[in-house]
Amino acid sequence: MYTVCVRNHVMIAHSFRGELFGPAQRLHGATYVVDVEFRREGLDPNGVVVDIGRASDALAAILADFAYANLDELPEFEGINTTTEFLSREIFDRMCGRIDAGELGSGSEALHSMKVTLNESHVAWASYEGSLADRSGQS
Image 1 (cartoon, rainbow, N blue to C red):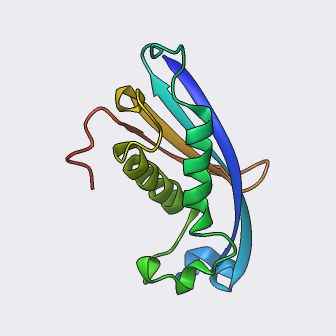
Image 2 (image 1 turned 45 degrees about the vertical axis):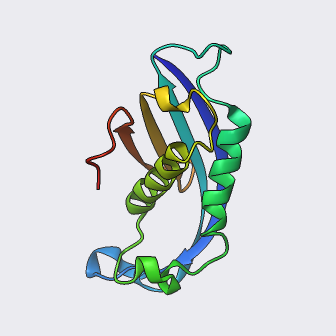
């Protein structure tokens, strides 16, 4: 299995509901280093997994929707605890949409799987990983 990873970062603000979150129930900021790993069984005719430039541009565009935003105020996240785990799946789903739209270029339809990791710090991170082979039934 071949893997290519692109990385970017995003600064957000949010708060959580529920006693589990202790002081994080108050508004606070986070800076995530975001890694997106693209995997495929074999290389495309150009010898790559995916075009790194296009993948980087797609990730930057996705993160721009969250940059410097208070996620509590975004309508699409109303009533949701925007945990690191939740956001990794959200970015995964948005990247799938860009793959399906052809934004990563020819050959991206042969991607096997993808993993999105949000690094909160050097000691804590969360990921979402899934197959790209058949997303038609995915929620």
